[in-house]
Amino acid sequence: MSEIQAKDTGGGKGGKKRAKKMSTKIDMTPMVDLAFLLLTFFMLTTTFAKPNVMQLTMPVKDKNIKPDEETQIKASQAVTIILAPDDKVFYYFGLNKPEDKSVPVPEIKVTNFSATGIRQVLLARMKQEPAPIVLIKPYNVGDKTAKYKNMVDILDEMNITNQQKYALVDIAKTDVDLIKKQNLL
Amino acid sequence: MPKVKPHRTSPSLDMTPMVDLAFLLVTFFMLTTQFRPDEAVVVDPPSSTSDFKAPDSDILTLAVDAKKRVFWGYDKAPIKDATLRAVATKYGVTFTEAQIKQFSLLPNFGVPIQQLGSYLDKDTEQRKALNPTLPGIPYDSLNNQMMDWVIEARKANARLFQKPTYLAIKGDGNADVGTVQKVIKELQEKDINRFNLVTSLEMKPSYIGK
Image (cartoon, rainbow over all chains, first blue to last red; front, side):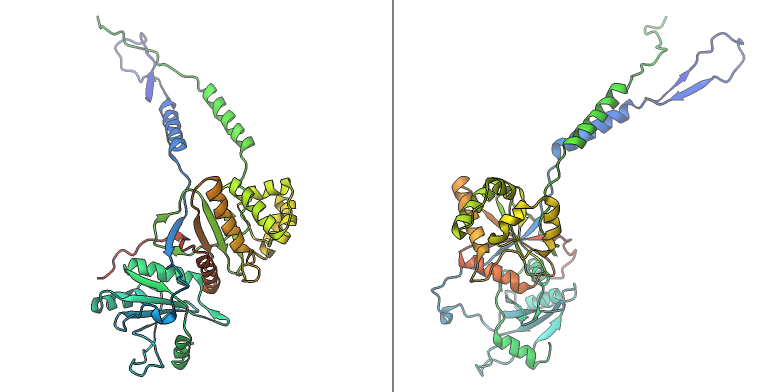
């Protein structure tokens, strides 16, 4: 405790008030105690920081399934997100089957990864169609390709918007042709 | 007469031995700390809001950088020892005990097995200088050394410790998706379907309009 050692004057001029001669000496013991306590606490309780991971589970590749038997997705539920180069995001609703005349040709729209981008698009879609199936297709033609960062960002958006069904698939030639036809790249 | 005589002198403690001890400890740690060996490649992972932590041990890390190179790493030394021996016999390359020992201390590496011997013979400084020019581990279908390393490591971990191996993919933000997809596809061919993508932490958005 900080104490002021007062020198007992004793004697001296009796009766008269006299300024006492004081010296201040601060005792550092509690501070050192606290330092060692903190040090011991942290020595015993710290653990190394582990990196954060995002879990990705791919479906089992069953080599015996023929392409016709694969699950057909309903046009009303399908949402395709194409990861384009330069951090752009293309998307369209419905299916893209140019060979099937009964299926209308979808219109590709452009957005980005900001908070007003693909997230809002997905949330708006979920108001109309509560359980969409999202197909994520990274653009990978020749030199122009999407970045890994885009893939992680879109998987992140899936988590944020709480999508239950989404899959990472290869981009089909029909999609590449559609992009070229609509002059987006 | 007061019961307790008023104490006039305060106790004083001589702090010298404590300071001596503090300096002794500092000197001891200064002389005995060893730095962790440098990783062959520094990858800058993208950020995500995922707050899952990496598993504690038995992690096989495949680092993919922007130049399409793949680096293999494992966190347990005995597994690296066993894996090197297995892959070496598969490719008909021999390693000395010193090289094997050196290998089990490296956190990761990225050279084809034919060049691994000379890479291990170099010392830390030379390796550090070489690291940006390393070719990475081959992963094309004709020379798929990467899959051999992955499979042998999983076999070794199952045999020696009876534990499953977690696969972590540490990609650089600017790496192209095609390379990562290729790596994932090759792993899927061997029935490995669960991956951990290493990311740095990002804040979750505070309000999501529903």
